[in-house]
Length: 511
Image (cartoon, rainbow, N blue to C red; front, side, top):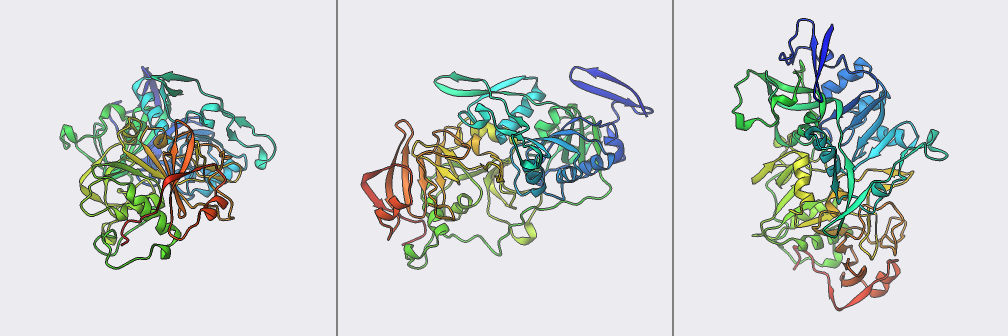
């Protein structure tokens, strides 16, 4: 029974009959969440299914609170994580960066059943961190010149997705610092935070395993009441102070579920030792390479020794298979891993060690783990040398669109807006034309932008283009073997010049 509550700053200390505020360990999930009221704002940790407080989410589903505003990077999948609360329609608004493979999330949004405020992943992490740090707002270069800054983006569609939008986003204030454009983003705070840790001591100090740290530390700091779901509770003093990832000051309740299950969203493994695909063992005719392999092998030539690199999902990630022998680069995954290793062996696959594509990965001797807000501090701070990512559309002025087809396909921008606005070199890898044969390199992008004037190079199966962002001009610098200038012209809608030093494309791992 609730006996009394007292507000200390932005934190609420809740006392139950027979329980002191310092008694943080709860025996029952239901007891830990029973006072979450309808209409609350919940901050929820996790990335994909990794580090997601699934048992607490199940308890909230059972408890029945409705009209919730939920702030989380994504919403799990249909039957796991926040997908459960979407199925029971307990969520009124999602504030997220990525819809991903959750069909319920996408369907409810497109049919006008769910409010969705899509926010760049790094901005989301920093908004939450700022909320926990007492910073009301901050300026970021991320998303300048996009609908995130300009406004009028659909937060809620009309009934059944028809008619005018029910809710549109507002524009954001912008300002220049040192000649660069920034937008003002407000901090996020929650009524309750739900996090998932590996271990907790009885004073609320939390430790994580692998990449399950992700959004959990900033989420823990920004809730009035933070509830931690952990796999083990140990006595205070068990952890060395320097091994604690979240200090107990941020955690009010701890609960250990009676049984535990962790799912792997994309179990990706190798059968034997990693193969050095860049060492050719036989002559390979480049004209026999598949479209994807041409793009991937050409993209691998963008790497240089000593680089710190972020690779997008799909073809960009595959380029790491062709890093030349003797070249050392560090691959960064925005969910909080630097020094990303190869896919693990089957018996080594770990639900707590994934990349940004939700695939299982492994460590290297140089690997390090950190939270999502620190990950994007690396990115936003310009510490990455190279970003390679995919695209739906590109333009000669360097504009990029790759995250949404309004009214049809909603994946979300994830970390792409943060990556392309970081000031690092941006290389796009994509098929030259869409499946229906229409050009993807246009004079102007028609889809909502990921970044304005951000691309340095475009690599397709037919050609390589360089973009001068200062003059907004695009130049054809390489053509694939056997591809004519006429074919490239026919399949390219954007204007371009032809380099006087036009070369034939080379491919990693080919004689």
